[in-house]
Length: 246
Image 1: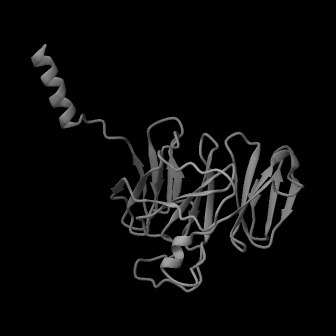
Image 2: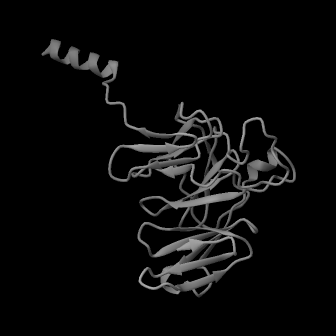
Image 3: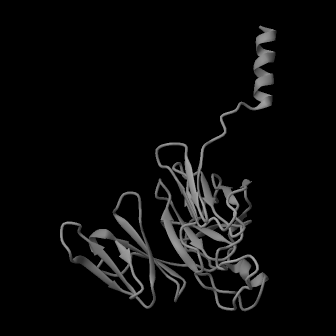
């Protein structure tokens, strides 16, 4: 599946040179499959909508339309600055959709009913290409697009930042909401769990290995990250006390 600047989404069969499905949209889309390959999502910035389609019935209307509106943005400016979506990804359990944005926040949505659950803050968005560049009136994509992703267990979200830092958010305790989505209900605001030094320039791409405990980030340089396997001092002390008491 591909999304193009010609405002189309195309479904491809790798055995043939021609696409087997075509969707026409009002603006350039962002697309993503869920982990089962049964459902795919299409984000349209022109209307701040995310459309969910059934793979077997992609030529019909979407079975769910999600409106991405953040009521907390009205506290910053009015009218609120539009959200510019640059990436979509489903969690490994298929329950949530991570919406990467070019601004200073990413969002997590409920994939079944469309509730806005969480707002990830604490990083510098890649809408600007340099730290000294001013923010434009209208939101733009900038360097954004691949700087945020799930960990394989979907318990954390890892993202890049304009200042080169690598941000980790803990998303294990997302709120549970049911019923018709209320666009006036503010999302849970989540601050970084860890803030790591990353690159000399913007960290524009962050991906986690789905099988091994390794992460890769890219910007002006490419970096591979491994977990710190050194034991915690408190754990060592507890083990020594246990041995002494026994």
